[in-house]
Length: 340
Image (cartoon, rainbow, N blue to C red; front, side, top):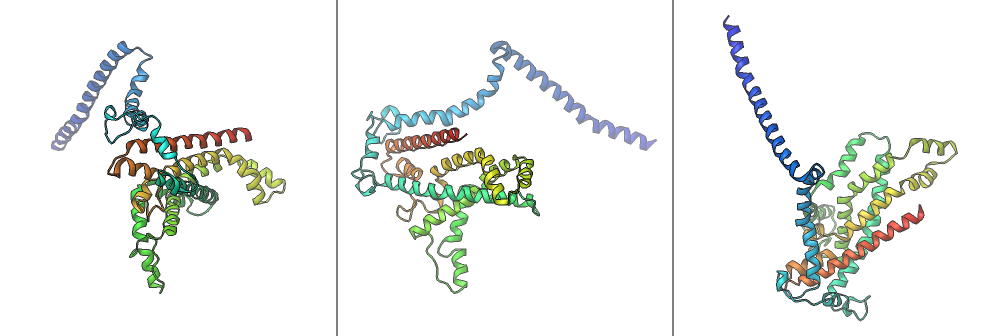
């Protein structure tokens, strides 16, 4: 009898939170229904979807669209004042200052020689980094698309660097490559002399490319792997019946069918490479000298770290970079359209 009474009490006590939760849920549903019924009467049925999108649009407008429009104002105004209404209108003076050169192939003859050094450094970096990134990502995707042991594990391993912050990536590699870092420690333990990775211009450029490829290849490998898995296996079986070997299947089947995905990878890699900043900022800071000074680093230096705060030059340089990116992207898309 006592046990039955205790069980009844326990069921009553334990059931109370469940009933309370149900009551609170009903109140919440009633309140939400009341609010949205009132909103629907005001904006109409067709206006409700726009209401749900409104918070995202506000965030986009405040943090992306508004700064983008403000950048145009800075590009055509001068002075060191921060507020646009305090900046005098100078027209295209900032663009002329950036583009004025006696010989555009020699940065020393340019009015803004650092800008052109950044342009040439960026062009060299983009051409090397994008080529290596696409090739290595493709090879990795082809390997991970095969039936190998622990395939899921290796896929996650290659993607893991993408999850790291670029600053964390740069600091890890800086710890490895500094004068008393891990790599030089290994070299000295093997009887070799230390290599000045961080203060030698050639080594600094080399390692910036290596680090960026290592940090980003997992993302592009994943895209290419998805493209490879979308190719029907029947196509390879038909090619094998026709007597095609592995290289012929790759050249005649894989590459043509993977071309749309490759175009996406190239465009994304190109845009990301031109905008390289965080890794270089934390790894070399643009040095040694101007060896790893790239466009975004130049824009940041003029707009924020320069004592004179040349917002106009920084904004003009960012618009020129955006224009080049648009031209390159549209050109690649048009070429792809002509091929198809």
